[in-house]
Amino acid sequence: MQRFSASSRAPFARHLNSSTTRLLLRPRSPLIPRSLSTQCTRAYSSSNAGPSARASYNIPLAALLLAGGLSLGYYLATIQSDNALSQNRASSDLNSKYGSPDDFAKAIDELRKTFPQEGTVTTDPEDLEVHGFSENDYHPSSHPSVVVFPSSTDDVVKIVKIAVKYKMPVIPYSGATSLEGHFRAPTVGGICVDLSHMDKIIEIHEADSDVVCQPGLRWMDLNEELQKKGIPLFFPLDPAPGATIGGMLSTGCSGTNAVRYGTAKAEWFLNATVVLPSGEVIKTRRRARKSSAGFDTTKLFIGAEGTLGIVTEVTIRLAPLLPTNVAVVQFPNVRSATEAVIEVVNSGVGIQCVELCDDQFMRATNVYGMSTRKWPEKDSLFFKFQGPTPRSLQETADIVKKITAKHGGTGFSLARNDKEAHDLWMDRKNALYSSLAILPGARGWSTDVCVPVSRLPDLVYGTKKDLEEHGLVSTIVGHVGDGNFHALLLFRNDEELEAAHAAVDRMVKRAIALDGTCTGEHGVGMGKRAYLYEELGEGTVELMKTIKKAIDPLNLFNPGKLYPDKPEESKKDQ
Image 1 (tube, one colour):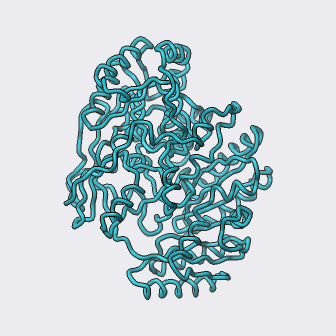
Image 2 (cartoon, rainbow, N blue to C red):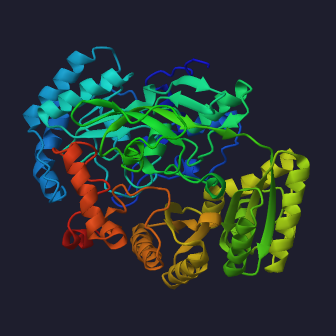
Image 3 (spheres, helix red, strand yellow):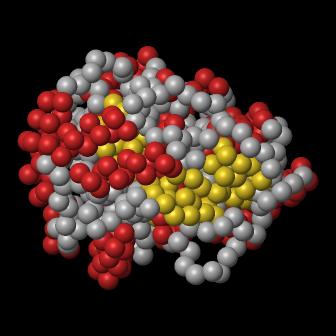
């Protein structure tokens, strides 16, 4: 067993660089937030980027500027003006009733007395803006009343008890890579619990292939630390490069490796230490690889989006780090590509990733001009093979080449060395920058849905036709091995943003009609909760709400996320 801490960070240093400083100072229109270029990089850029690129991933969605202090009146005025509105917007059957502005002021004063260390409690206006605004999404922006940086489970308990005492909402915040408004405060305000200081690797159990860590640890930092120590294991879930373990658990994430390793809702999280809304601390189970002792309460918190508790420690499984290689092949259409993937996956060969990139994306890659080659502008598949030996990788490539040719695949290109494999995979991972290149001056809205793999072509064709009819430009990148795809809708003005919003609504409903889901890996948050009654049915949603009310009767933990209003109210949100 190895015990150590990841390198510590100054409270705000990791949140700041010159480019994000300029972003924060840039004015924006009421509908279109600041440029997405800072944070969408996380969703589309390579996890294999160099040190300078990785540094850019380690910033939250906007800059955190150390401006002057914030007077109490600044946020109390906001609370007073928005309090009534917040009560109306709260879910009608979760019975939210928060404290008064005076209560909130007392809570903040008590937080300052409880955590007197400089930088632990902040009401600086720039800090509040950063913790309530996202470069990644277009949901209404609302700032917390105060931000607190705990360093331990005990710190979180103290924060929660103060929140309960004064009936103040609690909003967990970690990597800030959410695409669906997960860390937005309600309009009444609240306590933002920034877990970025809880980023330690507590224990590595190499023989057991697991790690105990804190929620603010980034998955990329974990994998880099394992590599530095010569441990041939890695954590295979790979969402946005800046994502943290706590956020990954809370949203039920996955990534490009899902076809091989599944999602966060599989067995990657063995246990969790959680602070409940009552202030009680629980540990969901022991560290054994499997257990049939009662409910799997760990999974209760996976995908709960911080609405049931704040995770403060996690035990996660690791997988063997095996050699890989990359190949790319073109197809006449999406249906042929999907049929090839189905046969490849069912053959059982060693596939770690298989990504569908549509013809528009391949055109964007050529326009962007950073690829080492000129690509045919056709629907394409990017494969990442996995195996213990070069021979096994070559055998897998030979089988895949034969299967793809059977389904109309052409131009099968297999990397000849590690550098070439990296360059090929970078063409897939540079999706954001490539996509923006085809519409100069545009911004992008990224969203995801998921359907049974066999129905993916119907969803893609329906979406592409819809976007074309409404004059919208978009690229499509899909984790085709599990039927999950992302559309990056480009827009240049408020009118096109409204059109994109409507197109996303139709795409989600189309996915649900195909026996799919409104989100494969981004989570529900604010943006997708209106669809849950249609997707899950009233009985399932009401069961979720029953659990929520039992654990958090005051509805203090991350209100306004995940749980939809009643069906008639839910329709108004769409």
